[in-house]
Amino acid sequence: MKVAVIGGGLAGLNAAKILSEYCKVDVYEKNDVGGLASSFCKDYCIEKFYHHFFREDTYLIELLKELGLKSKIVWKVIRIGQAFKGRIYPLNTPTEILRFPALSFFDKIRLALFTLKAKRMNFRDYDEIDVITGLKSSVGEEITRRFFVPLLKAKFGENYPNVSYAWLLARVSIRSNRKLTGEELGYLRGGLHQFIKKLSENLEIKKEKAKIKYNGKWNVNGKDYDALIYTAPIPELGELRKKLGIRDIKYQSSICLLLGFDERFTDIYWVNYEDEPFGATIEHTNFMPFEDYGEHLMYVAAYTTPEKVYEKSDESIFKEWVNSLKKYGFKGKINWYKVFRSKYAGPVYEKGYRKLITPYRIRRGFYLAGMTSEANYPERSMNGSLMSGKTAADKLIEDFLS
Image 1 (cartoon, rainbow, N blue to C red):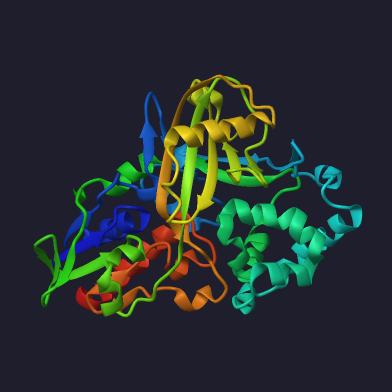
Image 2: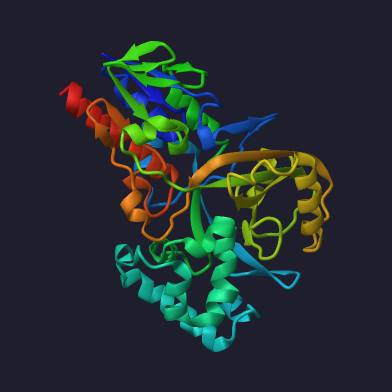
């Protein structure tokens, strides 16, 4: 039996790895293997887009162990912050939160009570409510505007008002398990390229754009296959999407400016910003040791729309964004920079999104996995993508090989 896997990201690689034990598999990936988890390498390797994982990501963690990477897993309590009126405020300990000037004392109490309440709420019941309406009814206008809107803008850009309240409730519930000193995150010391290399070992990877046809068999670039697993963005299916009855899904795009520089910016891993051309800075060397790289590394990230992702040149993004950072005290001498873009960085979890989740089995012989799968609702993650690839592979095995 011959199977084609379209897309060489985490979902596609994991599906192909599982299926390769049973049949002949070809993976089609027009860009770098690893997808959004692919890396930029110089004297070291660093992901093009920021990545980390959580203790709850048990499937990912077990897979890392299975692939011999257990010793590389590092856990660290990280610090987060919020920019407000030209200053960056840490928001980790109860004392730091009480000092945050954007909210009154009573608003902070109300916010704390909301995080406790969110843990008990079934987020699925709120899928049809937009996040702003839901927040205003739960915490009021001031907390919504001053605290949550900057976070939402950092995550969804101009799409934020349409996001489902379910997404935020699920996120607050997960994050409320944090320690009193901050949130604990995991990373693979040395970079995720090690994981991608292990996942893709012994796989047949074709660096081609896949053109899919159906002629009684699934045909990819002139080669026939008995079955196909599609893990690339839904819009790239073109007319085939309608023929297969797959609903259209709205995606957001991502721009990541990656900086290598000589002087630490802050002591905070993740800072959210409002009214800047970017939504967040993620200072990677406040998570992993400076000594691993010999310089400081930071992502400056923005979410935008597919229509705008290529609007500005790399140079103009670099100049504009670094000038904005200087308002907050950035003084580092920049050694190099790279701008990475993804037109389809992830779905916009709009109200009613649950109805749009793509099934794993579209029909016998055609399967879907990736960011629009159940495993990545209501928030996408490496763990969810890997699980979606496994589930799609399991469905195929059930249909053809059991």
